[in-house]
Image (tube, rainbow, N blue to C red; front, side, top):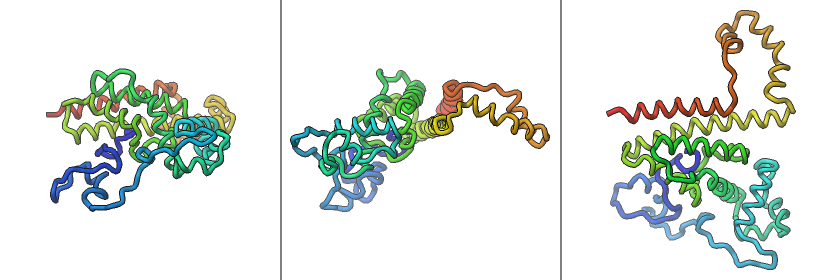
Length: 272
């Protein structure tokens, strides 16, 4: 899934797995192999585990830092975010931030988790289909508010508190509908659909901003060329799509595609 489901073994990074002898449970193979089973004496701390330093004359905390970073990204995308620019927005020296965040990648992890709170459903979903539909639509709406989110979807599992809560709410809705591996494949399938659909929609929005041309403007500008090309008769299937197909808005297209994917998942879950 878009938030925490690319890997199937959720757990606190850096945690200690129970001793299963020579056979590693699935979660151990993903997150715990470098700790308990390799007897390592040094366990790297994630940004979620590392304590914040004491406050100094200009108060700072991760919440303020992340809020400033999200604001910068909302204005100019992820490329507009750097520790130096975040520090400047907070009227603090750049080196101050390193006491809270070690790398820009950690900052992105925190930003991702911050907007995951907007994806978390308000009420527990009634069943698996409602859970996956809610996840897809809330992720899309969040990405339209924070278009930079499209660049982070589908990456590493989201291990922050909000990301884990989203994953838990989604998986819990399956209850005993299917075994865990089937459940994970269902979530991954739907996540793959909405991640791609959201990225495509955001790419169109970015193209509009970059060129100053709306979809309708672009169609009018490209119309003469396309008309001449289709008139050659070399693209009959494309010609039918252009002249006979129904043009729908992005939200309708997203919802229709999602329903088709959910129907396919339902058919798979119904198999004995």
